Image 1: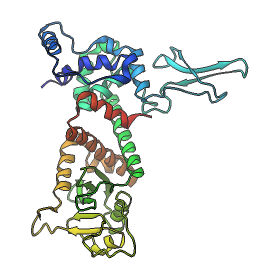
Image 2: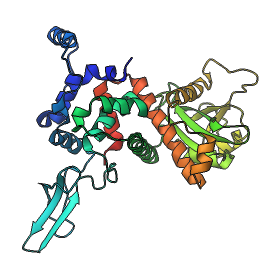
Image 3: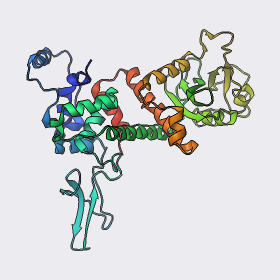
Image 4: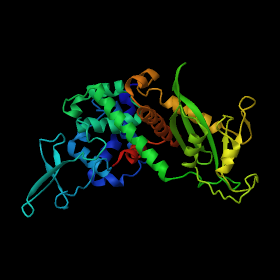
Length: 382
């Protein structure tokens, strides 16, 4: 399938998205409307049918979308006088617009870029191309090469301007990093454990898996999955799979109603159950001391019985590695060459992980094109 064919179905949808007056009140399309089906079939039969509408890529419409989706700040207050700044035309700025405040009462004339504090603040790329990459290409998993060809084949949408593959890579990397930052912030503010099983306690599975590695060095990720909601959290731990490090991640993500007077050997207490394999860092006594009940599955003997298994977390690893198989070809050699510190390596690998979790959420919930965009905007907004 050609890359452009992925977007045929959302032509009408994006016309609605670009309607600034109704931007916040878009309703789901009625799939049962026969008239719309007929019109769509007639459009596809028309030899002159245009996949993208030039009007969709008018700068003012794109700006309205970025403001209303909170990718750019909708309002700015003057740092000098505190008054609400006005949006003004200015050809000296890349987008032709600027936040401006000028007054004679307290003499000043202050201008602020409309991209200020946004994801694309330091991105010197035409806004129409950023819009195309963010709303059309990234949610559909188009590679850098395919995105470049789409831009090249539709230059009329962008005033016959092009961008390099490095520029596309920069936009993609910015989006991935913002997704990771948003996910980690959300995780730090919300502990798992609100959802209880029929037995009255939450159930989780934990495991560690190789992200990337060779015969000399391996980098690891550690994951937690809520068996009831299927919500998952995954962290890069590099080479640190110590009991203390993994327990800190568990305590930072799984709530417990631990009481020192409770008998954690009592199977009936309402305490989080955690299922794992028999990795040496998972010690029942350590979990018991922190208010959890640990159940270990010995994978050298069997893979589980009934509800006693870790199949969900094992399936998560399979999904993450499949969904990230086109993540710019990150290798051990790349990390060693371009990353000077462990923090830099961890940053890149966490971006890799959270990108996969984002794509997994799209697949798991079977999101429509419009819903994909809404989910992405939730992560990348200011």
